[in-house]
Length: 288
Image (cartoon, rainbow, N blue to C red; front, side, top):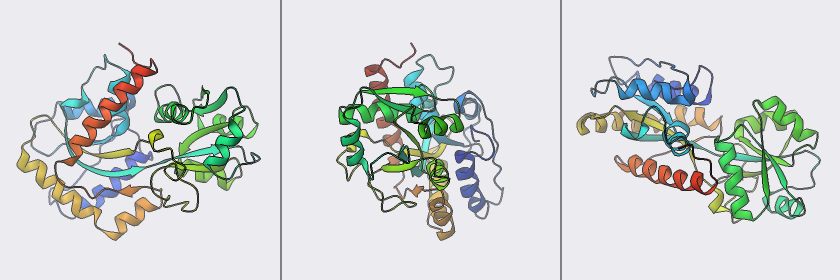
């Protein structure tokens, strides 16, 4: 199950992996989009599924780690699901007005230091873009003021008009905007060179590793899923990730593939949940 609609990034990722899994599993694989509640509707369905391995969740950091950290009264508990395998991770891009006299992250920091405050666009309170902006401000010491937008068009329009100084967007969205000269990509919020923009400075290269968190997605099973079944699902999905055509498909959208051992995903999820609980408490984003 996927908690987002057809054509979204999680849907693309789930269907890319599902097509190859179908070659391995005789029972077939059906991608069921249960959009709603920021991904939590699909979480609820998998929470209530029998632990037989036939119903799995394609979960993202949004609903699995960020949402429960922000909304302490969430109607479902994603923490009860069993993490099986982390599949992909992506990065955000720091975008600025095309006319801004910067070419990389360090240039931006020098240019922005006199802006009080630095107006940064996001896609809504509590979104990954919002958290990125807050972490960026904390790591750099810049006085960030977030401006929340409901849609990409309004975001890009205000950035181009100079009404905001910068923003964070997915690499694919940033690529589209840059292609139409709506924005300039000043940096990649990652540790490795981007698969789409390898020459653009990363946050790690700029010394801003504290302003990073990976946008991961992966497979989760229902509560009580036996270890034997979970390990079989992990093995099948891991084999899919070694297929060159799968890697190529994810490269086109700027994603990288994890190749982690069985059992490691659970530790990552728990670590990120704790990190977001702390972050949302510091910035008073939590809803108790």
